[in-house]
Amino acid sequence: MTANFFKFPSLGNSTLTALAICVGFGAAAEPMHGIAMYGAPALPADFDHLPYVNPDAPKGGRIVTGEVGSFDSLNPHILKGSVPWQLRFLAYESLMGRSWDEPFTLYCLICETVDTSPERDWVEFTLRPEAKFSDGTPVTVEDVIWSFDTLGTVGHPRYQGTYNRIESIEKTGERSLRFTFNTPDRELALIVGMRPILKKAQWEGKDFAESGLDVIPITTASYVIDDFEAGRYVSLKRNPDYWGKDVPFMKGQANLDEVRMEFFGDGTAMFEAFKAGLLNSNREFNSEKWESQYGFPAIESGEVVKSVIPHGRPSGMTGFVMNTRQPAFADWRVREAMIQLFNFEYINETLTGGRQPRITSYFSNSELAMKDGPAGGRVKELLAPFADSLPPGALEGYSLPQGDGSARNRAGLRKAMGLLEEAGYTVQNGVMTGPDGQPFGFDILLPQGETEAGSMIDIYVQALQRLGIEVRVDTVDSAQYNSRTASFDFDVTWFRRGLSLSPGNEQRLYWGSAAADQEGSRNLMGMKSPAADAMIEELLTATSRDDFLAATRALDRVLTAGRYVIPTYQWNQSWIAHAKELKYAEPTPVYGDWIDWQPNAWWWEDDTTKK
Image 1 (tube, rainbow, N blue to C red):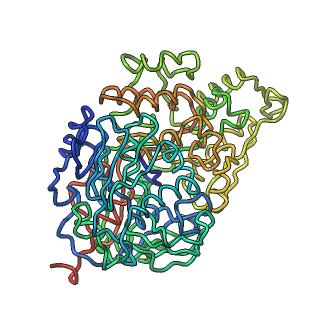
Image 2: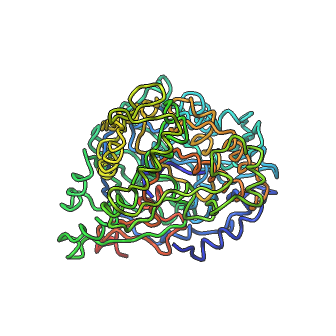
Image 3: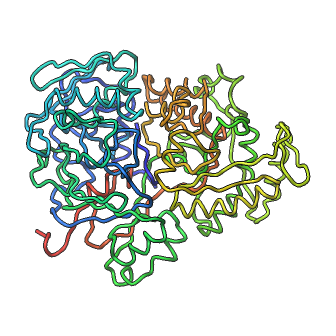
């Protein structure tokens, strides 16, 4: 299970421990404090705090970060509107919380205990009696059931797949409820533990699906929305009466008094705001810029420090996705030609000084990645029934082209031309012409503020034009970008998809055939692959670690050889420049800088907060 994150190493002892327990499935014989996808939770029932937090962290201070874009909604659980991504994770809580130091383990948060059958065809939660919303009212079983029903019926499409796999939700006691599932899927018991819990009474008489800026949510979370201005900023304040401060999962978390997000029109303006002190933390994604542009006075004086955070999670996929719903990109040869024309080595040298390695597959940088060369063993067995429908290279082995680093990339041009000719394309009077006799061209949709993606495209367009391909770059604001990608109104667009060490049901949303035609789904490429669908089912129902690894590696082959995305760099570590008062504990978790690690696990330490 993963979450789409805007960013992206050796494995430490905690990682090895977490991976070592992932050798088979365990089942709770009685109510437990946590649940793991494989084996048992790494932490015992009497654990005091998560291993990557400081349990004695002082409370106080603030973190102010920047975002490129805008927003027009505060409801992250519906399809309508553009929402600050952080709200989904910081402003809401779920029955259980996820540890970022294990591949996929949840520990009780709103729930007091969790119980499930050996087959995991049902899961039961008992709520903590002390769990409360920010207005002081208790969390009830009715609130939980209403949350699932509402999200599953009128919420964002990402919730509907799980909801449709729930046979029933039953109240089994004053503080307990049971979910029974209608399909074999061992991950469902964990997924329902991660759904946000909403206050039923707040939404009476309101249209949940149409809400935006008009409703400030009342939730159980440690942070509440304190102030905002549409498109400009959102300020979250730590609730001093937060009910869960003594829950082991939350001990040492939610330390900052304020978490504030400022919004900017582009990355340059955001960086200048950071240098001027308007922001006090900034993630950098360009290694050349990290080395050459972080020498401003606040760095030199020590007021701002540079931290490098390693991680052991998969690279995920970042690049330019091609929409196979468009006839031209339905042909793998055209997609391969577009990859051949993307002169990565030259682009990488130009923009990063050649410092950042390329993404080689969707799960690269992890043990889940496909192996080089032909498929073998269990991976080959899984893919063999689909041999006739697999893209070339899935079984035989596929790797991205490597240029010579020159600007012309002649070898790539030749290979691209050959592929296009095979697909029926010809150059007539200097114009690439398709099999239908029409000039071949396409639009590249970019979100406003993605300056680095724009710089890559500027170089890429030159290569496309050399073959007579007409390209139009359309840069739009975040609202238009979200609307157009949700309705698949693009030819090629900028793409980021974070992946975890425990891929699960979200893979259906990313690459499943059923999601290809579902508006708002994350299957932007529109792929419909029986092999990918089967590999997703295999990894979801695997009964051993070896079978899970084989299914994931097989899926990685299908995705990579499918040539749906033109990959760019990977980030196997995070670069964060921040105020010297902002601290974090070491060792950092295996997931590194992931989702809510910084705002939740960091703390502010100065003369006023030191104990």
